Length: 118
Image (cartoon, rainbow, N blue to C red; front, top):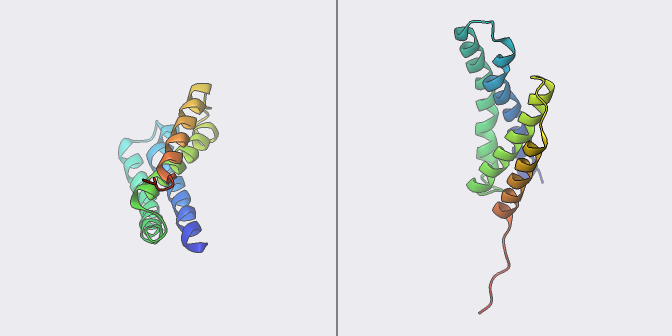
């Protein structure tokens, strides 16, 4: 269980750091760009410190394609919460519809049909 769960937790935490690194500075547009870049790089260090082990550990339980799909879904979930909570930009119906389509795509990524009998 740990081999499948720990990579997911690490990916979730890394996505939280990366979302702040990429978008957190938008709340502070008055600060100099160079400061936003340095702060983002500093935050991204922690993201990489979680992402690399997540992918290393996760590759023993998931395919690389599945890991990337998980990472993208987590990115969207984290970003949706971040956008509404931190930036004050709540999601609209069309955003939810788009996320539902992406969840459908993720289902297909993990779906393994039964072997076809000939």
